[in-house]
Image (cartoon, rainbow, N blue to C red; front, side, top):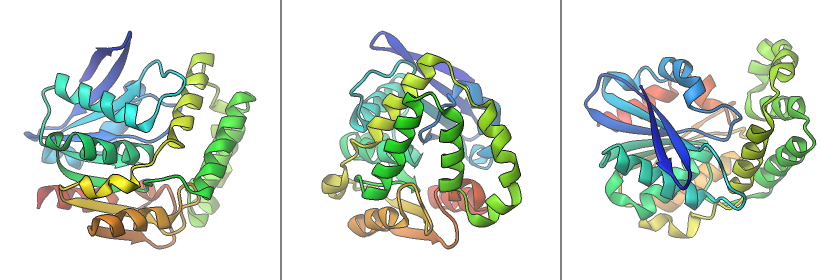
Length: 262
């Protein structure tokens, strides 16, 4: 099911699926792809969660203003959750979605029962600055193929690239967003560089699970370890995997599912 929540002259889309009774809110990372258009893939990729939960994948605003921040995204997510009647939800955020999820747990604690953070960060680091600023420059130049190639090389493991790298040129050629989608991507990418939740992590009181990739070339594996260290929470690091551990690791979703069902 697709839900559309009106806010600030634009809208926030949400896709829901699953036969469980408990709410699980999923917050995806930075992408050209919108949640609404990816509904079938999301239902398939996260079908395990639908066994125990009613899953809500909440997107960012359809029209993203200049100067939009991760904190603004958290406020919008809270607004959408309240309009959907969701509280005390299990929340899973990956990459930029994990940044949003941290602020959500800090400022809207009643909305979050348990929190899973996948390959994310609580503050900007040099590796993150280099990667994100590179994507912003490429998007500004209209070189979307270069963005996709750079993302694929930074995110996936060497083994994955060796096996599927021959597909990368085709994926790059097929990626050509509309002008307004390109501007939205740039503003969302810039928002990543506003993340600074680290000094406030001690305000998160719910149980937290952090999952990271040791070879993360987008945010670094140290960023995941840093969050877990500040929270004193459970941490699992995937050796040999990077930022796309959430796709490559076969047990990624099952680890989160067990955590939410404890």
